[in-house]
Image 1 (tube, rainbow, N blue to C red):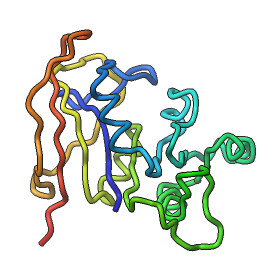
Image 2 (spheres, rainbow, N blue to C red):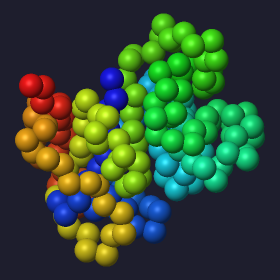
Image 3 (cartoon, rainbow, N blue to C red):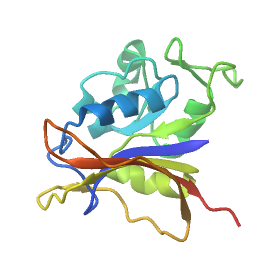
Image 4 (cartoon, rainbow, N blue to C red):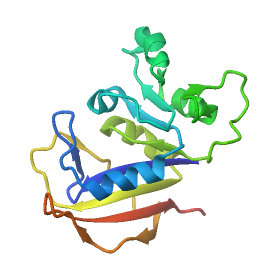
Length: 186
């Protein structure tokens, strides 16, 4: 199953200058809990903004420009794919324990079966048609000067399956809710 996880402002903003727009501690905990043990797929700029591979997860970076560094990144626990489709294929063979992709074509018996797309904007756009689920932290603010946005979602294709109570982050003062969507089936 392919899932998307993102924190999105009311106006769709998700980033500015290759950085998050807010730091909501509970959202970071939620992200860690939901994605732990699962492969995570991200674009190059998202990977660079993290500064390191996410522990406890197979990290796959979609990038044509990082291909020449694939060996060095592999040693650091990161796989490099040239396309989203290749990344999803690698993730299906992932070994969350040792952060290496399986090369024998068999599935990892410890894999939870969920692959997470974690950004950024272009990777989200490419992933929407492939996704089965979306875990969205709706952050109740508008960021007019953002430069990266989450794609618009066709409400006719998605069904809300859960929504947390509204919470307020006392550090940044923003309200937010954790919302899970499932793709509607015919």
